[in-house]
Length: 391
Ligand code: IPM
Ligand code: MG
Image 1 (cartoon, rainbow, N blue to C red):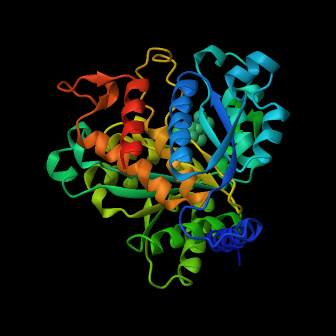
Image 2 (image 1 turned 60 degrees about the vertical axis):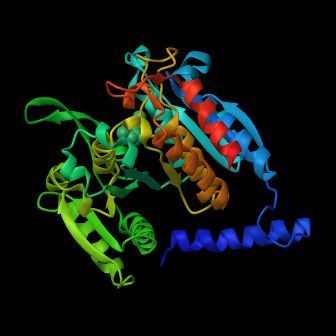
């Protein structure tokens, strides 16, 4: 049976042990680490927000005595412009030779006309699958300071929203068979949603193990009243749940889940779902929390090498204006420190700084509402950095 997180933890321990042995260290807090981080800045606001995350990471490295080496690689529209393809081999090699990857965002209307097989998004999907990143964690929580930014009624928001969406990332319709054929009404296009037992099992383990560290509740979202792949999904979730008797599992159809997310989001702890349902529900969940500019994500496989990116897109309409909110990318960098580098204290330092910055009333345009003065991307990054330095 595959137990990815358990494997990863075992790997972490082993890896940590080797580092300690190599350095002759004791493993106590404050141990320095050297890490190689690949940067895929991408398109639109990508370069600005990645720049903010790098500045934050540099300050963390200085403060905690680590050394981070950053190398930039092209992917998405900018790679199409420079090399005629959205994911050059050099980028793949660079990512695989790094300890982790930070990605801004890819795509934009400029590349809407390019052939489907070289669209910017293809580059993103290919790097996810090449790196084997089948687990996408998308935490959606409401910051008390941003309650007003939520479009939901105050009495709903007051119940609290703290959801971890566990999205399967390398299977399903995104990677299924596709094409054109002659159908009942003439030419038609098709995309196949298919899931293997193995793919469902491994994401189920991640969801249950994630829930064990939270409120021990998993909602598995599917469309089992219609789709065969969802029926297999449901059956497999139930079977794996038996290995985690403390975790309470319930099932929800995706249409109902979309409704429940706005009706009563506090009912959710961990949501586990397929690639496409997770894509859609995580955008919905992000808006409930106030702004899509706030939500980070981590993508992991069976090693500690992950890819960390905001869940939002490249926002070409505001690129270069300074209006981009870098917080989702900065929080993604914090997730990288926690999940890939086992640097809990450093991750917390970033998250606490963001909390405090918001509590003290600093805002970017997307979360400013009518009252507060909006800071630009660089200004809010400067403030987050000054808070980290101050701890
Ligand atoms: C996301 C994005 C991507 C996805 C696109 C850009 C391919 O929407 O990360 O949520 O659908 O996975
Ligand atoms: Mg999406």
